[in-house]
Image 1: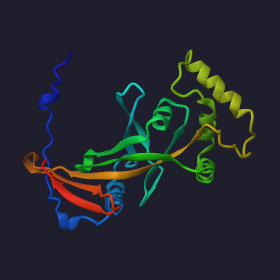
Image 2 (image 1 turned 30 degrees about the vertical axis):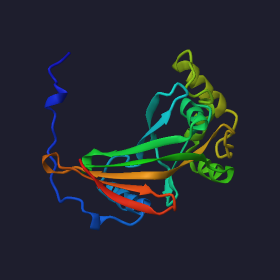
Image 3 (image 1 turned 180 degrees about the vertical axis):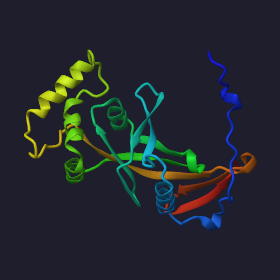
Image 4 (image 1 turned 90 degrees about the horizontal axis):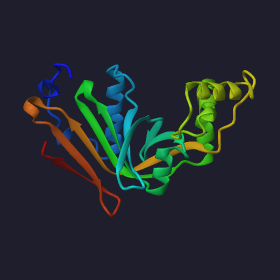
Length: 217
């Protein structure tokens, strides 16, 4: 082990505190504000989020995915439905995502239930992807399963590259598509001086309305 000690790594936070009066009434409206500010700050891949699902074993599992859209109903992302995360989400749709915007001392946590997007939206997004990404979806049909080596992946990619000519539309694989995470709890965290962070939680009530609480840091 080297001499780097994680316990000695500290980042002092500065800036104005976050107050209840600063917040929008609806969580995805507040997310829209913060996502825009994260984007304008020049933060690398502000749409990167850590997705956590529940494995059939009962253990949680997390990985980073890219949000590819959002609206009042929640964020959307795309994946291989037969991948490990796809199988887990289909078996247990409870999930959460975290947007770790450390560079601007903020993070957003969204917890809820996922649902598959319809074929129309899946086809529309797949058609907007670069050709290489489309081919990659075909080449990684067995996502999360064992492969012999890198050469096997490259061979599959090349094989699919010869199926469709340059400029020819590539259809979406039936096993590939998107999910929407419908939130029932959204937390906005902002780093504060002396570790006196600001945390606000939006919690959906049974009547569908949202209540907002400040949480202790």
